[in-house]
Amino acid sequence: MTLPKLALSATLGLGLAASLAAVPASAATPDHTRSAASAGYVPGAEEKADTDAFIKAVMKSALAKRAKAPSLAAAVTVTYSASSAPTFKSVIARSTQIWNASVSNVKLKEGSNPDFTYREGNDSRGSYASTDGHGGGYIFLDYKQNQQYDSTRVTAHETGHVLGLPDHYSGPCSELMSGGGPGTSCKNSQPNAAEISRVNQLWANGLAALQKKDLAKAH
Ligand SMILES: [Zn+2]
Image (cartoon, rainbow, N blue to C red; front, side, top):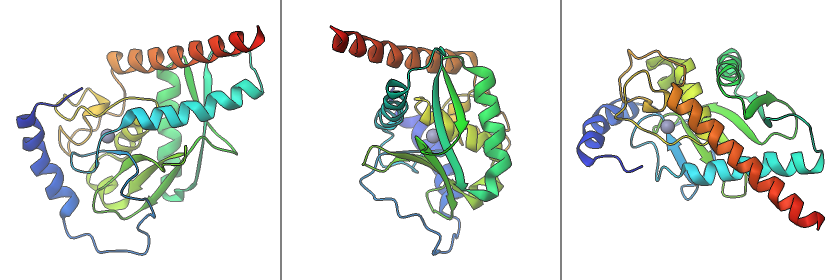
């Protein structure tokens, strides 16, 4: 979806003001590469909001595991590790509960050999979801931004990218993927009906594609 230029630059000011506010350079700065695709909580946090690359990497990883150990469960399980984001342990658990209670075709589960990881630290760009360019993905949670904005909303928003949703900063607070667009007072951490439906649709399609491939292999 292309964002209207005017709406984007209007919220860009707010986002930049928040993300540029004197954050000292820190050793905790993640070792992400600038070439990796990422999507942020506020506009300007992403080089290119390439959510497609992110969901493809995570879906490929989750579906490959499922193909090796076929399950009768209707939902695809996406595993994550929160061990590199200890400060956000409870917030990540809450975000997982929110998503698992909302969508039916994909489920999040903490576990080993994760499809994606959560990380924490200081980054002038704030929080974002990113692919590492090697088929893996991670969510980076920025300390300062998680104090300015509702931390559960930030985490559930970034997790929404993992599940395939793009940013829509011009949307209302009732939309999870409007991110930092509606401002720091917005504390809604629930995806709306359209966002839930989009995630279910994306993962149903991914599963159908995998089953089609398996059938082709069987013949
Ligand atoms: Zn985002």
